[in-house]
Image 1 (spheres, rainbow, N blue to C red):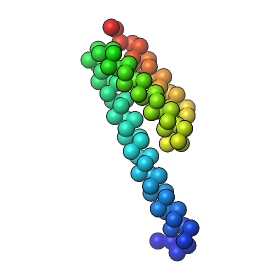
Image 2 (cartoon, rainbow, N blue to C red):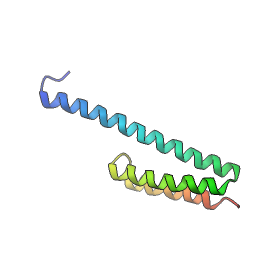
Image 3 (spheres, one colour):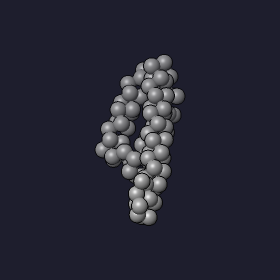
Image 4 (cartoon, one colour):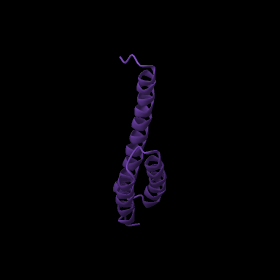
Length: 88
């Protein structure tokens, strides 16, 4: 454990940020999984609905620095390709 007060505070804030980032990443994985499940079932409306949520959450995560903006763009692209490939 650090002896310097600022370092002790830094340890605490880093842990809070780590927990928050972990929760955001987990939420992203969950919603992307929902899109994939809907796509596998051929349910285009549900997949599109979830894809809109995914895009919003990915943009938020990129803005907050949880993931890189290019990674967000790549994931959005992949999700939208998947949704657009579903035959209605």
